[in-house]
Image (cartoon, rainbow, N blue to C red):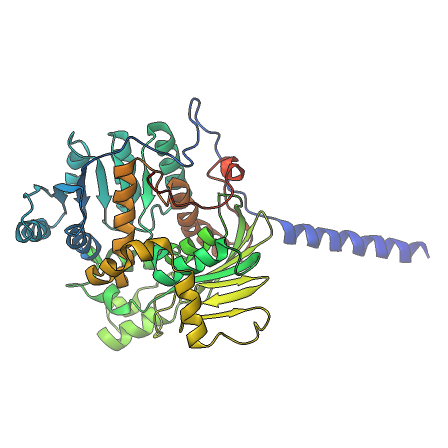
Length: 454
């Protein structure tokens, strides 16, 4: 009898240890806020009548931004910078054709520093490769400039904290240019969620699924210095989470009433890059023999403080149609964007709405930004118009002294998935804590609001 009891106790101890093991989480420290600093939630700065802008990085994204800015009032492009001088000249030609003054030209490895040091610049607009986003943003804010940068804003947790601490210290805007937050369907479903159409939103899904193999391997017209291929060679996890994540985080009011607590992440092995390289360059080529670290498909699951969940996926190496997923699941309804825009609502949520009812619903809940600038945005273009709406709102807020739609905490929270997903994958998909970049201030707000001039 005594032996039986001992065996039972031993089994209980083992089981308890097993449970404890399962509950272990990789910690991500949250440094104390530097003395004298306060949060920059709803940061409003002095209005700027004419926003003087310097563009740094004039490749695919940067040159497109220059073209779009020709349609905006209240802006002046004063400086252009790229490591390739010909790109600077090409963008100055765009200014010339639109009867705009020529901008000062900068190039070289550290030309961006000289741009940030100018005294006649209000806003630095960064479209370089990923590794320069945080260094330029920090340097720009330290030199008294507002800054916006392409996605992701940061690649490491340390960089995320650099952005947050510098924005809080300088009281300057720091925004990641997450254009997908301004997609017409994303804005409409956000408006619906904010008005309770889906009930309590409890689960959302997002992705960046985009076949980029040809761009990764194109030495002439692809990414400069093949920087994206190099990153995919050395890293795993989800290196590009924000296009899908940004809109659904806004739907869940992340750091505006809820926060992300922890994630788990898992990746497939890498197959696609090697197979593509063999077919394109031969089985003995350097590209076919390179041991790429990035798994083809990464899936990351996040749990929030209020018990809601987010699923994010990343795949840029498979022959699949473009997909950001964008699913919203609530207690009263459901929405999905890909492969077709569909919505289902109670009392018959087993069936999607007819096209006629869907069109009527989307018209009813058309976001105010779409009504205000949507038609011009479609004409100007830029991923269907969402890029122009993003630019329009940025300049509108700066000119009117309003808080920006996306702040530095968005930039840090959405970008931190890059490092944390990799850490989870490398540790057998263990849970990893997501730091609270607001340091407790997330509970001060009750939902996302888009400011308008009075």
